Structures are given as structure tokens and as C-alpha cells.
Amino acid sequence: MAFRSFFLSFPSKITNSKTLINPNHKFTLQFSTSFLVTKTPKKLKKKHKPKSSPRTNPIQTQPNRIIEFERIVQRDVLMRFVTRSKQYLSNQPEHVLQLDDAGKLHRELGFPRGRKVSRSILQHPLLFQTYRHTNGKMWLGFTDLMEELLAEEHSVMESMELDRVDKVRKLLMLSANHRIPLSKIHHCRNLFGIPDNFRDRVVKYPNYFRVAVDNNNDGKHVLELVNWDPLLAVSALEREFMVNEEAAKRKFHFPVKHGKDLDLELDDKRKLNLLNVLPLVSPYSDGSKLDVWTLEAEKYRVGLIHEFLNLTLEKRASIHHLVEFKEEFSLTKHTYHMLLKQPRAFYLAGTEMNWVVFLKDGYDRNGVLIHKDPQVVFNEKLYKYAQIQETEPGSDVGLESQPIT
Image (cartoon, rainbow, N blue to C red; front, top):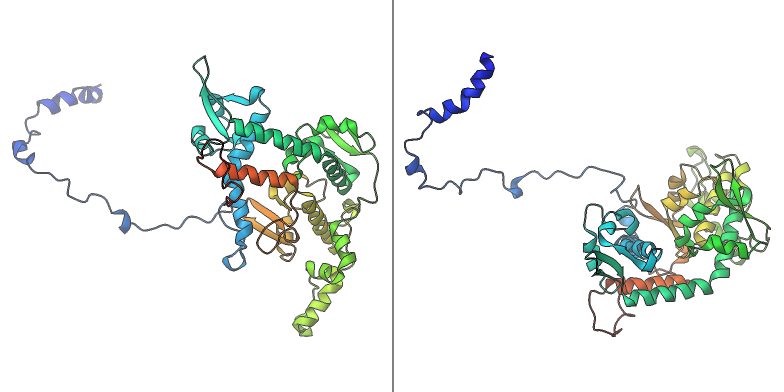
């Protein structure tokens, strides 16, 4: 109690104490001490190097970097809000969303977490707009231009339906047991240009597909292949081999293990390594029966990823897309290192955690796609509009020549 009473009476003792009053306080107030340096200047502080992290560490070292591919990855990051918001709002009634709700959907709409969604909206004024409803609430929606672009994209998808059907058929032929969960196809639909309502369109092709319930996989709906088509079961690599055998041989690198005492010259090593390249293993064979750690299994996995990338719209895919089909394609956790060993066929861009694999054959020396799907042409047009901050009403001048950064 004595200890407690001391602290209760302590403030009054301070206020009543004359010893704490500075008799020269009027004199000291006339002089300012703001000029005194109380903190270490920023330029004199020791600069700490950021910690190494797979999230930020680039895959490629400076001499091996292909700037054109790295720019494509950066462009995807900049356009994430456009692509995701277009996808999400297109599935909303009247293509609108209350702004308060939009601020909570950073993952669905693709804007940085912790930032206001209005900041991303203002960066693309030709595509997105906000307006106040009669109830006083702010809403997010598309501009008239964006609605026109969506109609154009819809017509592109309608015209490419048969091509997309063949892509899904080939995916099923590549997969183990010739079946893939519909949820995985839907998750990677933009990679192949598959429409959102593809599941509803499956019933139009009973000779190709069948929807079943997988009781061993939480009752998920899976898409199964009905008929095997030998004409489709020919990979792009096999077609290239028939045209240019030497180019196909030089594409991959499977070194032969040998002792240093052989003292082989460089040309002799290349000839010896060619023995491991052939024969090629078709990605349309059953890779699940191969021993995982054999050379034949590695050839199969490399060829399968090569064919998988050929089926994509832009001849590239991210780690998340490959992981999605890990079981169906019999891939291992060493896929990243396996692809790094094939620099002639593949290029890995981005960071160690979020990398993207490019199929080099699909691009020219300037990093431009050799064959552009109509959906790719539309996407590039959309990106050009997304980068324009302002323009005169009804003017399209300079849009086609606008560079994509």
C-alpha cells in the first residue's frame, strides 16, 4: 500500500516541487536549437544490401539475359489489373461492381495489396470508369470502348472454337489416363484461349469428350478423351525432325557421363552427346510407366513441356501453369533445373520463385512471336489502349503504332 500511495502522490509532488522549475526559462526560449543535427544524415548511413530471396533473385545472369523476354514478363505484371479485372467484371451482372467491394478483391482484380483500387482505375481511363449510382454508392464498370472490345473478343473466340477443341483434345492425349479435371482446364483457360463457358460447350462434341465424376478426387468433374486421334498425336518436335533432322538433334543437350581420363576434345564430346539425344521419346506416349530417374523419362518430360508450350497462345507458360498439370504430365520437383539444362530450346525469365519458361522456337531474334493467334492480336490491341492516358473523343490516331512496353 505504501508503494502504491507513493505513485499516486508522485505527480502532485512534481508539480509542487520548486526545484524542477528553470529560473532562466525566459532566457533559454530566446535561442533555438533546431540547427543541431540530432540524427545521422541519410547520405552518411550505411547502406544495407537487400537480403537474397528467391522472390527477387533473377534467374538469368546479366550475360545470359534476353531483354525481349524479360520485358514480356514485366508487361504482364503491368497489365495484371487490366486482364484480371476484365475477366472478373465480365462475369458480373451488368459488368459493374460496387467500388467498396472492389477494394477488397485485390487478388481477383489484380491490383497491389494494400493500395486503393481507384489508383489502378485511373491508370487505364479508356477501359475503366467509376460513376455514382442513385443510391449514392460509387461503382466500377467498363467504358463504352471496353464494351466494344469485349464484343470483338467474343467474336474472335467464336471463330476459333474448333481450334480450341483440338488443343484440349491434344492436352488430354498428353495427360496420364487421358483425363484432366475441368477445374484445371478452367484455371489455365487464358493460356490456350479457351472460353469461360467451355464446360457448357463440351456437350456439343460427344465424339471427343466425356464429363465424368472422379470419386477418388473429392468427386471433382473430369474431362475424359473419348477417341484417340493418331493424326493429332504427332508433336511439333517430331514434325520438325522429319523436315530438319540436324536442327532437332542440336536442340537438346543430354550429356554422356564419362571419365576425365578420356581427354575428349569439344567436337568429340558433342558427337558423344548426340548419342543420348536420339531416339526421341514421343510426349504422346505413356510417360507414367517410365522409371522417373532414367534418361528416357527425362527425354519424355522435356519433349512433353516442349509440346505443351507449342499448344499455348504465346509459346510460354509460368511455373503455376506447369504445376497445375504436375500429376497429369508426370513432372517432378526438378522441372526447374531440368529446363535450365536446355538453354537452346527454352528460356527461363523472371525470378527463381515466379519464373516463366519461353519456347525459343516460337519467337524471332527480336523477341516477337512468329505466328500470332487472333487472340494474341486482340490482346496486344487491348494493351495498347490500356497504356493510353488520354486521347481526343473518337480519335484512334497513333494507336496501332503505340509501342508495347
